[in-house]
Image 1 (cartoon, rainbow, N blue to C red):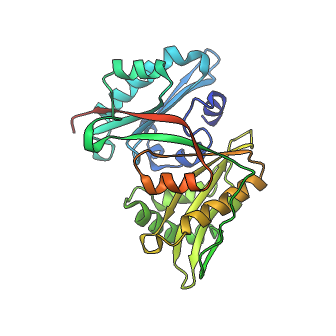
Image 2: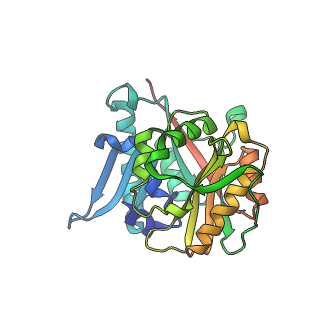
Image 3: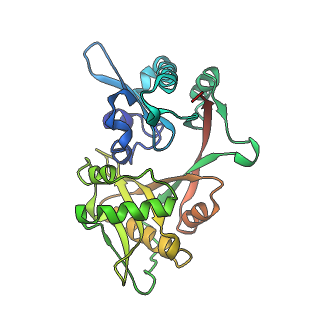
Length: 288
């Protein structure tokens, strides 16, 4: 699955940080995953109903895109309607697509998905930003705070509590975070947390490198505890993670964020990230 996404890069979202997403609890149930194979039984495409994000992740070998993307959407619609158990039910599912992928946009609209970029108060779109990995702005940690790698499994529970607080969501689980520690292509030195003097964790930032091609990195996720915001924690974390990715060979680093989430977007821009592609969000509603 990682190889398919990597070979389709840069037209596959999350190709770099895919190991993180493939650790999610959505994949605990094989019914949430579809795999297409060729005549030699080699995988050529896949789709995942990413329950934590309410999104459908899709990766397809480039030459089979016209045939298999509509089929992946058909499979996802069947899953949305017939998903097993209440945990698999969602009132809406979303597909993210680069704004210049007219082929995918046509297929999405034909399947009944609607763009969310201009729907009023709840409008939603995203942007992909790029950072030249060798030009890291040095930002020191705020006084009393220390940036260091996550202390392995012994710190997973504390991390999960922090993650949930930072994003005001219970999507992150101990099992998911524990799996990331043994995920392929994890970089322990770029799996960072911020520790306060009293031992509390104040923030986190995980850096990834493109599997098989270590010159492209990605930040996912980055978060700061509400108790430590507006102190420069995010900038210090990002500075340290960028430096570590550069030391590991990253020549560029990507990050995705919501276009309307001003604090995150402004943070990335202030650290040297520049928008390179717009991402549209398409939605289809389902009865629950």
